[in-house]
Length: 594
Ligand code: ARG
Image 1 (tube, rainbow, N blue to C red):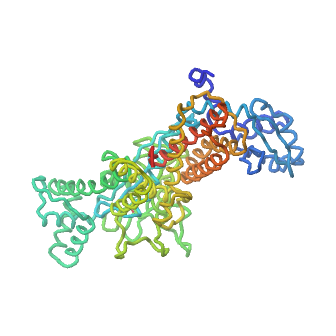
Image 2: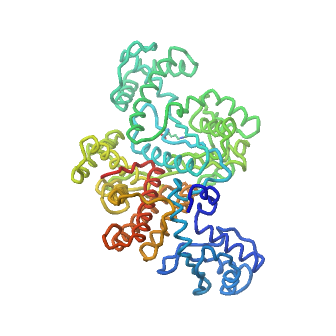
């Protein structure tokens, strides 16, 4: 088989989900047989759990109801007109009208052997790329990042990778809290500590939280300081140059702290991705003026408000989105209106995603509603709050340190790497440097995977033992499975070439083959549902299928025939390829040895 030349031409056939391919064939058969039009998705093709059956088609039941016919009759019509001899070996109508489908061995084999040359592991690129603007991480500058921002950073980064991989454009923006009244007292505290506007004096702030708390204490205890702080806010908002320079120095110093966390996490947020609240400050007047000009604002207790339709409290009173406070200042909601308007309008983003904790669901729903009223978001756009639950400690409450304080991210990540070192120390004959890099991959991978593998909307319990377990749905289990395969491939003298014949004859081989072909469906599900856990679930299934296969089907044993060995090596290599790619889409490293 000449893979290179052929691959290009056949890309359409080789890529994509097998279930959808079958769906397209069934849909075509139904069109011919019954003159109905359904989409490949509506054909309801599902992987079958039953031995000896690969896929199942469930369309007959619902379609029969729609057409007023018997389900088995509909199923029979679909089967009779099915033109799929190239990929389907047999069909059988079961129960009330399910169609059981068995794929052809040669088709399965050809598809797998061609897949080896596809770095995308069969995942197609979208036909119509959109432009996504993703708001994630978004900590507050005055404070150190805490575990709440961990989830946003990890989930946002995984979504960015996934959405980019399928071919969309993605622009990240880090909506840091870098503006507002706290910055008056922070700047005054900086001055007291000997900082200067021209940057001639530099003291690194070792502990941002401590710095904030000191400023706060002085503000509460010292009327003079509080006065200075208030005047400083006015100067800041008035654009006073010296004040802005000091503010900038504080922003830089805080950013340094976040960058340390991003570096540890392997998250690609850069300085140029910073679009803090201050960035939108010059747009706020205009935003509110436009809302008023469009007749959307009302004055309520001296504040300028919009009451988007459909938002009421328990008493049935309309809920306001306060766009301008009675003191004339703008707050969080006004900034988010300006933000959505900026990304939709100025930056022509089509999809606006906000990876922010569940408690802000109502805020975003109201912001989106007002943007629709104002015409900033139209039917061309999709705006979505990508919410997530809390990280809980073993006691089921929000996670705390042993001393009862809030957990700092840097400390947590360093602890993850330390604990992983202990796990790695037992297993390896690597040198110290390699061991450190593996410990990093395992430790950080554990934290990220624990976060990504559960449904993001739910809370999850943070447990070192669980996330570093060598078996179960963990990163290290997948990483270890991958290194085992790589070691098999090293032991085999030659790497399997694309085009090597594959014949998944044993049921365990077939189960693994089908799992490999389901990767595109898992990616599609993760992108559609903004649900990275769909990838985790799939990779875990795949690694489990590999283990069952490896137990039953010796690869390198002396009595394994040459062709069987070749075929099994392809399955092993493909498994490693999908595990590595899948982990990389989650932002997790796959070390070569462990
Ligand atoms: N800084 C905010 C917080 O820590 C999150 C900002 C989220 N993004 C936004 N556009 N509102 O709660």
